[in-house]
Image (cartoon, rainbow, N blue to C red; front, side, top):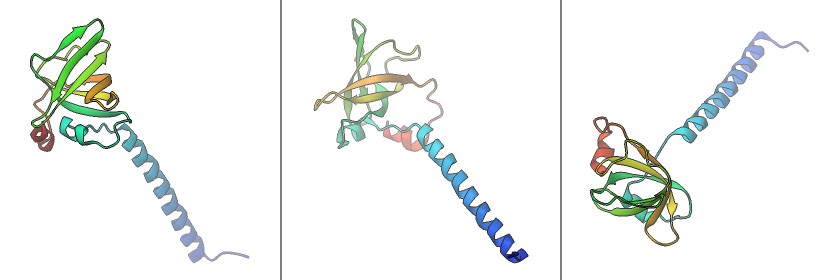
Length: 136
């Protein structure tokens, strides 16, 4: 049984659409995994599921940085709230008080102390989306 050119063209179009859909899905799912989102301290305190690891972005409160052994403690603030952060390890070179940082980790039990596994210091605050700048 020989296919007509019209049917052959229709099958090729369907195959092309399926291929484009699968390719788009793969690209979008890869981007979603690599995009860095973070919550402000206010949003993090109201977060229901505190057992999962997530990121918090805010400003390091002035005169809140302390060090005991290899553990650093500091307060991360936004315009409304403050969270105590504990981090064990070396802080980035650009980390300083009153600078913007993003920490990744999870809350310590039911307390409002955030145990950070990673600290990311921002290098320049001149470029910031307006909605993020207003939240911090």
